[in-house]
Each structure stands twice: as C-alpha cells, then as structure tokens.
Image 1: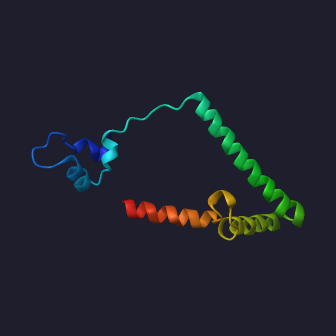
Image 2: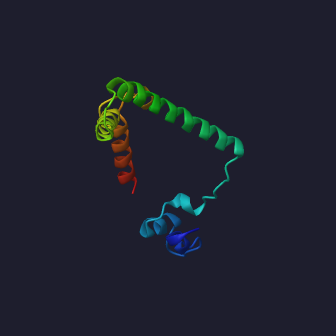
Image 3: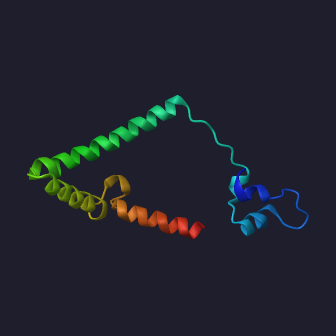
Length: 117
C-alpha cells in the first residue's frame, strides 16, 4: 500500500474501512489491489493494437493533408497539420468511438473522473 492508504486500520474499533477510506480520500479498492505483471503475449498484442492505430492515423494524415495539399514550406505544413488534427479531434466522428469525436470522449471521461472523486 502507498500513501494515505497505509493509514487505514482494518481492525479500527469505531470506524469501518469504508468510512476511513472516505475520510482519507482513498479508494476502497486500493486496499486489496495487487498489481499483476503482464505476460509477454499481452504486451505483444497491445503493441500490435498500438501499431494498427498509429498506422491508420498516419495513413489518414498523409492522404488527407500531406499528399492532397502539397505544402511548399515547413511552416505551411505545420499549420496544415495543426488544422488537420484539430478537425480530426473535434469535428470528425469516429466509428470506433460510437460516432463521437475524440474530444467528446475525452470530455465525458473527465466528467466521470471528476464525479468519481
């Protein structure tokens, strides 16, 4: 256990574990959490999934911005890429995200995390 979770006393005579966790601002689940080392196979699958995402993203960038616009200067390319990523994250819905934008998903996650705290 780390941090404030170490202050929780399992056999406290007056305060339940739940009450102690609430008072200390500690998630109850952290008391029982035991990290498990990931297997080499799991890590390989995760790397594969990351590569698929990155390759699809950069394929889209190349075909929708770089090849299409043929920017003549580095600052023009940088401005074009900023515009493309802004559109990609805030305007363009993604099928894998339930036809929501990455920005919408990020905002929903931030709200859920804030409510959970």
